[in-house]
Structure formats: C-alpha cells, structure tokens
Image (cartoon, rainbow, N blue to C red; front, side):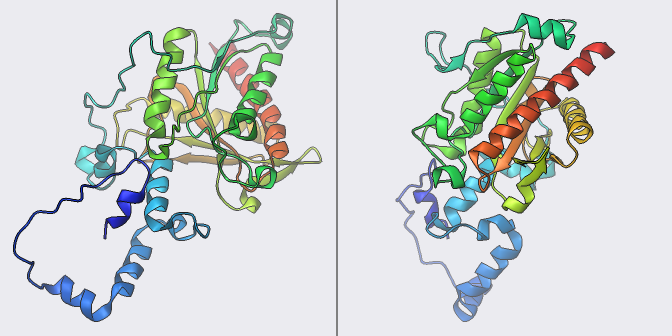
Length: 333
C-alpha cells in the first residue's frame, strides 16, 4: 500500500523487510481478496480530501498528490501529521518546533533585495514612522499556466510568484514602506520540506533586519479560474485569499493576532475593491511560520489558471490595501 512513498520527493523507504512466518489471513485480507482493491480505493476516496483525486494526468499519481497536499496544509513533519488526528498532541511545545539557523557564515538568504524607501512618498502617505515589511515565498516555483505553460517553473524566478512579490515590493516602496523581499529558493527539489526551509529564510531575515514588523508569505492558489478571478476597475485580476494557521499541530499560542491582522486586510480589501478578496481560511493543521510575528499572514494571489499580468495587477491593489491597514494601525496606537 505504501510502495508509492519511495517515489515521492523527500520520502524514502528501506527495501529491507523482516523475515518471519507469513501472516495469517484475517478479516481484512479476506475482504481484500473477495472485494478487490476497488473497495479500498472507494474508502480512500471518502476518507481523503477531494483534491487528491482531481490531479492532472501524468502528475505523479495518488502518492505524490498526497505528499503535495500535506505540504500545502503545512503538515510537513511526522509530529504535525500525528497531531492532525490525535488531539492530545496539538499545541504542545517541543524543542523541534523551532528551526536551528545554520552557522553565521552560511548564506541562507542569498537573494534578499535590499530595503529601499521613498521618503517623499512616506511623508505624503502620512506615516508616523516608516513601517518595515518582509515578503518571501515558501513555494517560490509556483507559476501561472496561461503565461508559462506550466504550473511550476524551477529555473526562472521571473516566471513565477517571485516576480509578483517583486511587484508588490515595488508598489509598497512607492507608498513609502521599507521592504525586504526574499527571492530565496525554499523548494530546493523537495516540495514537502518547503515550510521548514522557508522558516530558515524568515529567521535569517529577521535576524538581519530586526525592525521588520510585517511578514507576508506570497503564493498563488491552485483552484478553478472561476474562483480566483474577478474584474476590478475594468480589468481582470486574480483574487486574494488570506490563510492563517493555528496552534493545533505546532506551538503557536498567539495565532489569533495573525487572524486579527488578516481580518483587517480582508475588511480593507472589501472597502477599497469589493469582491477582490475570497475571504480568510483558518487552517487548523498548520502554522505557516506565522509564529515569527503578530502581523504575519499567507496571501494567495490568484491561482495557476490566472495569467501573470492578472496577478501583477492584483499586487498593485494589494499594496494599497496593506499600506492603508498599516497606517490605520499606526494611527490607532
């Protein structure tokens, strides 16, 4: 049953098997022999999330889809997987919760774009002080199929969500915000370990720039185009979707502060551009590295069925939303 695991990125199984007497037939064995694999496949279809059974042809089969789906939920460790089904494990703190940074001489973030600020824009927008934002991409290879012909591009960041993050950074800077944009490769040929790798990226950035208050992990979704597309000001754009983790599987007692911040972003999007936001998803089985700051959120910009141009337009709208939310926060302090 688990033979697929050896073919999934980041998963390996030993070929050795313990010697011993052949297992006796039991009820499950008899059911398998009489009913065939079909029964068990149907049971899995009921038990497992629907997206696992809707993969594109030649995408790697059920096993790889399962691994990718778990990674998308942030379930990237054995402990997180167990906590998904064993409530008593949820929210417990362990030494493994936090990632250990590599030695100081190892360049873990080789592609951080240095922060820049337009002081004239800062004065015009009315900041009490210049806010500092970090943008990064856990799934930095996500691309837009109508533009690239592929769902993922591994060798050209300009064809991926990284370019959208760069546009967001550019527009935030134009509004007087200090931005650090990480173009770091967090996939490194192992999609299922991306959140572990991106945590290293984030922690290194926060260590280098302690003034960072706002942390955005920018992705694109993978659902039908009808769900991720709308028209704003006469132009087709990718819709926004805000994801917030919790402390169900990993220690994150302050996750509600992330949720409060996401609610402000959603409300501002509704105020400025009605219909642009798809809302907020609270993912109970993931933390999404949001424990690093109170104002941390995962943002989906469009989906794989959108074009790059649609996502870039959304980035400009999102910059205005973020800037106004941050200014509101400053004025309320």
